[in-house]
Length: 60
Image (cartoon, rainbow, N blue to C red):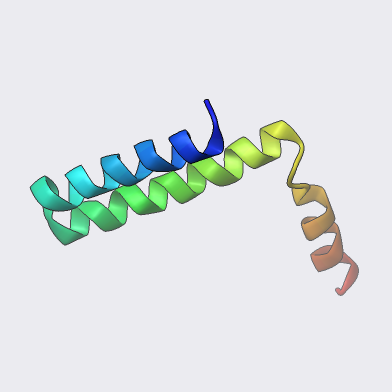
């Protein structure tokens, strides 16, 4: 699935949730979509959380 198609699907799902569930449901779904994105990026190896944590612990 291309990134364009994936973006379209995510947009459609968020639109349906906003229409039927209201604004609060829209915010909840958007939050979990962002969490899923971060988890997916970590699993793909495109985001290194160890580097972010390492910088925070080096400052102390």
